Image (cartoon, rainbow, N blue to C red):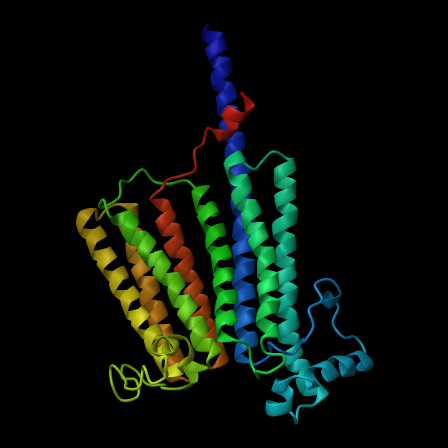
Length: 367
């Protein structure tokens, strides 16, 4: 009986070790995907800030991997660009050499997007075939892969909005494109955090999980508002703080009719709402930190609340500096990177209140 018990314990221990190795490999893979997503969003931001997003006027998921290689191919690509309103109304004096500068930003953005599809799909297939993906994670991971495919279509849907009538892309479609990227990013973070070890510390209060969810949701909403600001070039106007157009609450916020359209198409209103959202996020992170420190000052949850508030405060400072400097490229990208850091940490903090994924899944499947 003792020998049998010992054999069973060894088998369980071996299975636990195997599960740990599998989860470690999955975490490393998802961590790499997260870094790639950050690079994709930053290159996308640079594409927007350099007005490069309409330089490639066709959607070629496979053939588009190869850029123009000869002078004739560059001329052909440039002629396609010359057909759209952006060139005709804004860039009619552009040369082929000028065109190459904006082309490379958009091409790099699309190349990284394709690369992320590869670094997600191929390792997932390997882990799946090797039996390293736990059953309850299979559909979520397939769902993320499907969202990635949908994101490629949304990207082209966004670009197409600026090819016939407009001289830029629709801010609605730009916001959809960025939010989808952030949802994919958040989903990868959620799964990676669930595969990580968790502390046994109890939540500081019964509402701590709710606070964490609200902060994560508001972080994502702030990114959505930031996309509207970018889509309307609203960050290049009203470059003062804390006053905006000479007031805390500026006039003419609802000047367009119907009134609701101001929240999406009035640059002043959109920038003001983005500022208000930042104040709300700052206040929520501060209150959450104070509550956690008072209720359970020595817990990992409280320490995370401090880090989260620090990240939100730093992001607010970067946002203010970006505004005052009138959105130079490097500051704009730093602000976008800060938004992803805040979102990622907020999602990880929220996921921490649910504990690690159950560790007996593979053991049960093999019995």
